Image (tube, rainbow, N blue to C red; front, side, top):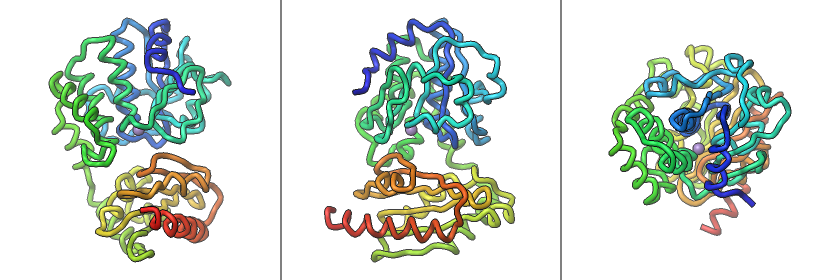
Length: 328
Ligand SMILES: [Mn+2]
């Protein structure tokens, strides 16, 4: 059983010095949840720091509050009495930040992934929440007054995890909370511009190369492509520049399941899965040691060859889709 947000809040109110930890390969919801919770805790009069073990993509730093998030090494000597993870479904998702926990469980986990493993002492997870940032907002609005900076960084996670209010998880609560945050001064146009309009020429060249690898199967319901280390290096791109590419594959008419294979570094393959309306891609990701949501999931495989992984995963996806299609 999971704990309620009221129990999470009661635990946070007892805390004096808090460490908030996000997940590796940070996305907008993760970054938003870490920064917002730190700002809320500071407004509550507590000492709080936020940590993400991987680099934060540069374009998020245009949003207020994002720059307060620190690396693992910057927080090596930070003393805290309460550790909180956000938007992470299992301990491995926090990457090297686990070193800051010195072997202990996180005191609190706040998440919205269906595959959550309840790895903390107090665990809140509800997959009906479109974003972890919605849970953070429910904590914040109970306890502090919002200023425009906090409102904006909190809205970032709600906007990004709903694909800017267009995915199937965009329910009435999303619009209600987003409206409240806009009322408190969040600028959705600035969030959209920072997150959606930062493409570089190198990234465009990478997209062209990626689409040259595109394959379709199952009457066009399944589409996949890959990005190899060679392609990334040739175009001066990093793994970070592949964010959003899988969404472009899904956007093809008739595609239900989109899969992008990213090899970085050599023989280390990260696989992103997206579905459009009925397939639960977390079921495919789980078979390869990953997890996630019905419409967005992922997994990472080390010491494997890219062509072999493509064959294995596409075979599993075909098997899944053959059945999922019948249940459609
Ligand atoms: Mn999330």
